[in-house]
Image (cartoon, rainbow, N blue to C red; front, side):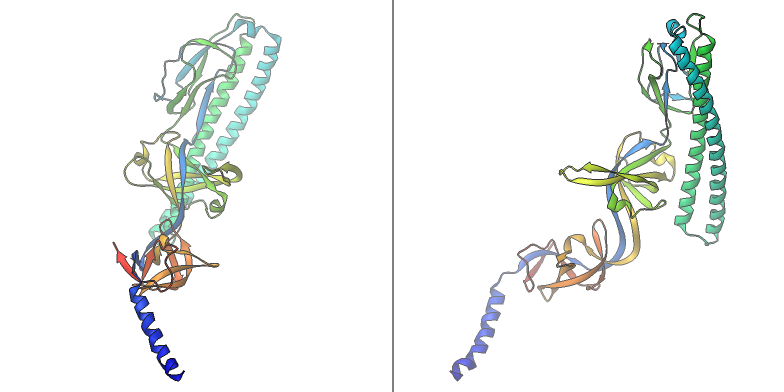
Length: 391
C-alpha cells in the first residue's frame, strides 16, 4: 500500500500534464488592454424637423385663385401667396356674421398677445446675446469652459430664433384680424374684395395643399412655410437614457447621408414621456429630445424637413481611459468579468467597470495596460483553457 501511495502522486501529475497538453488550444481573438480616448454615451435614430412651421389657411369661405407657388420656392415677408374671393352667401348669413365678429375679437386679442410675446422674445434675445458676449470674453482669458461658451451660443441662437418666430406670429395674427375686418366690412356688398394672404416670414414653401382655383372653407390649409436653414433634430430617446442628458450636452450626427459627422447639442428634453412598441414588440417608455446643430449652416444645408439621421449622445469623454472592447466583457454573478490571457491560457478575471461606451468599456480596476483579453468568449471557454491567438 505504501508503494502504491508513493507512486500515486507522480502518476497523477504526469496524467494531468498529458491531459493538459493533449487538450487542443482554442483559437480565439485577443485584444490588448490600452489607454485610449473613451466616449460614454448612446445612439438613437432621429428625424430633422423645421424649428418653426407656418400654416397659411383661408380666413373665409370662398374661392381661392390658382396658387402658382411650388414646394421649394422662396418667399419674402409680405409677399402675396394666395388670393381668396369671399362667398356672397356667406357674407349675408347671420350665423357667419356672428362667427366673423367672434373671429375679429379673437384676432384682436391674438394680435395683442403676439405683440407682448414679441417684446418678451426681444428682451430674451438681448439678454442671451449679452451673456454670450460676456462669456466669450471670459473664455478668451481661460476663465470659462468651452462647453459653457457653446451652451451660451446655443441659448443666444435659440433666443434669436424665438424673436423671429414671435415676429412672424404677430404678422400672422394681424393678417387674421385684417381678414375678419374685411369680411365684416363687405357684408351685403356682393362677394366683396379679394383677400390677399401674405407671407409672415422669409422662407421656403414646404408644402402646397391646394393648387387649382377651387372652393375653400374657412380654416382650410393652403400652404405650409418654413425656413430649411433653421432645422433641428427630434429624437425619441428611452426615458432611462433621457434622464442622463442635460441642455448643452454635445452630440454627433452620424450616417446622415453626407460626408463626415455633424456637431449638435441638446437644446431641451421634453418633460412628458410616452409608450412606444419596439420592432421586437416590447413596450418602451420614451421621451422627445430636441437638438440644435452647431457650426456653419452650410455643413447641413443638404438636410431638409423629416430627414432620417442617427445621433450619438456624448455623456462623458476621457482622453486616456483604461479600456477594453465591449465584446470582451460579460456578466459574472452581480458583477463583470473578462478572460485574460496568462501564459497561453484563459484566466477568469473579475473587473470593476466605470462606464460603457458604444464599442468600449472603461475599466476601473482588475486589468492593467499591456494585458490581453479574449474577444467574444463563448460558453465552451473556461478558466484554464489553452488559447491560440487569431487575427
